[in-house]
Length: 349
Image (cartoon, rainbow, N blue to C red; front, side, top):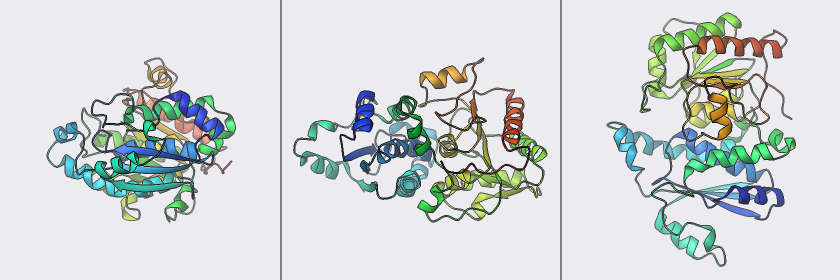
């Protein structure tokens, strides 16, 4: 649930700084509970923060979640409820220091606060948007992408995430170059969206053969890491992020410090790299991100998708049995852009 309902208002608000303060509302009764979903929401707020607008991020939480979460399996509700505790850290990772505030509150308290706003009440939903219409989370990605594509290059350059995000949450990144491989396994994601053992092994082999000696961080939550440890037992080319870094925000910062990021079948971990300066590769379908640019890029003969102003090697490819070939091309492009040396992180603009 978001108080900005139209793209025109996004463009006007950013271009003219009409609002010195703006409130963004993420209602757990109607919004997707995943980490990546919330990070996209925070990135839209970042779009405003870079223009000098102070954003207040309000998570409305009455102790429940969207009804369909319970259908994902036993324990799904408790699993995703626990993730809400990490939302403030995610806001810090993406936010511009000094330009954001965070609050978690009940809908009753939020409504009382909203009703006390003189002359501004009309900007907020009068009832909760249970049917995901005009002000649902689903519009966050399209609004963000549209604003960045229509804005000047200077806006895109300033918006792109980088390794400096780690300092926002007090995380120290590894010294020297390394690769980041995102893993979603043993998850509640429906429809075969988890990676398989053979797929992960093949990814590691492709990365290690193209960049011998480059440390490879395998990054996932506890359940995904348990699966990856079993599949990659004895492979001294890999390191497991969970051994040194805990939580989604820290794992995203680790991705942003990498020489490049790779993920197959998607997952929330890919969001930070996708809106960053580093080269990244993703092979997965789309859901809430289905803008005309994404749909066109991920079509069978499409060129792939890259965020506005992203690294030229970066690419999001649709799900395909040919992912090994497209990943190999990506790794070649990364090597070429780095002069065939072990790649390094692009410097801040």
